[in-house]
Length: 390
Image (cartoon, rainbow, N blue to C red; front, side, top):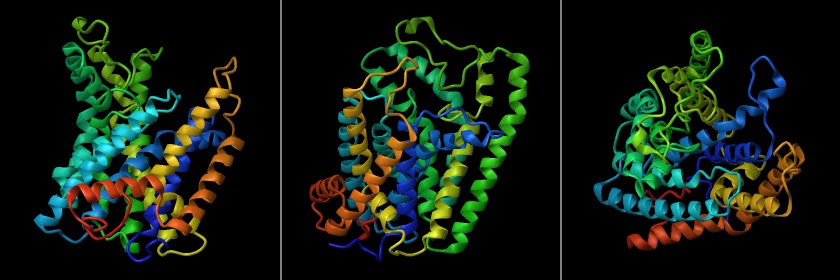
């Protein structure tokens, strides 16, 4: 069974593959803090940005399977929403199982499933509205989530589990929902058009440059008021769960933490900068891979079964952690470039062989079958286009 060469967009699959391989690097390599003046630290660009690209591509894929630039009928959207909800449940379960392995990885799939649910009422929203909403969320949510976290913490169990998904951790879903809206908007554009791809690169580069340069400029205020850097970014100064009655952990002075742009900090500058970089990556892949070809098939295959590849790599890291111990520096002995290269090579080679033989990844096929059968539809996808959303 061959990969469908008529309905898939090669650049989207290649971008998804790069995002997964970037997450490999973030999980395997011992990365230093990114310093623009030191090229040796540029590898740290994958830290946070690869996961953001993966989240943006979730929105792109959802838009593609629900019609792309072509509107769907209300009946088709009912089927689409049902199947997306079932996919979200399956991915949530898978993410929970992978999280239970106890690896040092921040498993993105639980938050990823939340994005699927968030997309359900947004399938007919026009791109311009989605872009504006994404920008508003990027500005507003980082300031809202700390007091919201404190409020949910005061309620106690079991509401703390909800906070872990929506607010806490490396993937606060309320903030990361901005990436979904961006991806949904991009997926409603004509991604086969070189003009759209070039504009995506231009706008993305401009947004990223503006966010990081502005952050670098205004962070001087933080250095002046807080020379010892005691104030933390918003993803760090949440209220403690053990004493929720004590109120907020942070003071208004801590809002200076919003001026930073570090990866996973959840600040407006981080959100805009990471979103811009993801647009550059996706637009670049659309330009470089306008059509299927033998040279881009390995990466296309990896992107086609990204859910399987991601899940297997978490299990592989669990196995490595089980047979090795951390060194005195806190790192595992296998955290090096050669391990990443081995993971990437095996993932690309295995994906190429699997897709050439079977046409779709095992987890992707299983989740699609569950979603389609549960909806009572025998169609491969609600839009009739098998662009992966897993």
